[in-house]
Amino acid sequence: MTQVVFRHQPSINTAYQNAMEPLGVSLTSVYNKLNGIEPATSAALVSFSAQQAEALIREVGGMETALLSGLRVKMLDGNALGKREHRLAETRSSTAAPLPGKTLDIYEPELGLITRSFPCEDAYT
Image 1 (cartoon, one colour):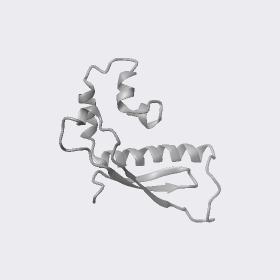
Image 2 (cartoon, helix red, strand yellow):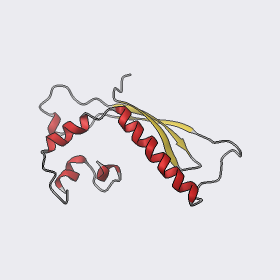
Image 3 (cartoon, helix red, strand yellow):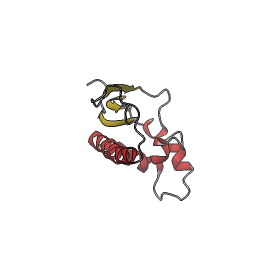
Image 4 (cartoon, one colour):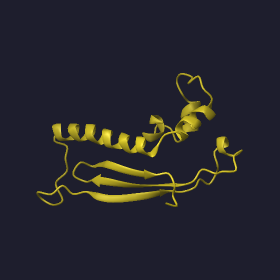
């Protein structure tokens, strides 16, 4: 997943195929494991990573100029993860297609970071 998140690989399938060491499990098992990740886990990962990065950014003086002096500006943004044009091979045999999801994210321009994320796996919520 890290390879995909950091855009070293375009997809989970490609990352699986190009793994330096065999994972020892099938691609279907990898997808099953990823499907079991709760939205709260993803949100916690974003928050934890942002805390770690913020400490480093502040330590090295890498913050941007404040947009409003004396205030910590935060921007709310979101996205809709649309349905895929081509279904993944692992999901083609299922009649229940993967649903698109949504996220709301808090971005702090002074840090250049998304510091909080609120993922929702049901795009129709």
